[in-house]
Length: 233
Image 1 (cartoon, rainbow, N blue to C red):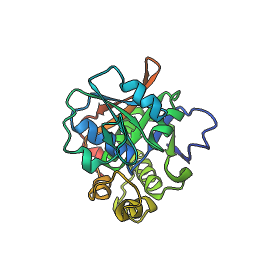
Image 2 (image 1 turned 120 degrees about the vertical axis):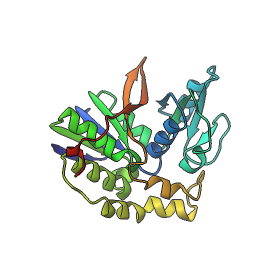
Image 3 (image 1 turned 90 degrees about the horizontal axis):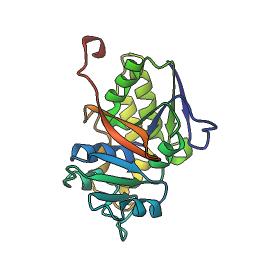
């Protein structure tokens, strides 16, 4: 499998297969939303669009980066989200990097959104599809976010069936700028457990696939079959 690692700005055209990585915190939050019962997540292009998509739909909740804001129900924090019942609800998510990256590759034939919490499930989808080439979109810090790059590189290795020790990749993520900012309170809308939750390897057994539905980019959980002996490397 040929793997490319690019920033959002480097996406000259939509790739065939894209894995959009945002570890801290968009797609860790998305995975937690599904674990808390959300039916789907609509990825919004702007805060105004997020509020417009929520308006008139009592089953929808809107989520954004940063501190609480009028009209938004939730913030982009796995630590805060894990106590929220989202059973059957639709989440409208707008973040600084993750949702932007997913929307940038909306025309790809396969779009997976990922973080460490769904790393193995994501890799297994790529293995099952026998993808020749995969573009990993490193969303944070203009493609320089080490937590996102580490996760992307780990998934790429697992997608080839290569036996890989996750420890070094998780260590890089734990020492990243984003982890430091979350720990030190530089960013708002944060729970003290956020970094630890973002670094939980394979917490969830599903991958997350984004597809176009009625002109919207919609993220849904994708059940991955149990691992076979070949998957345990």
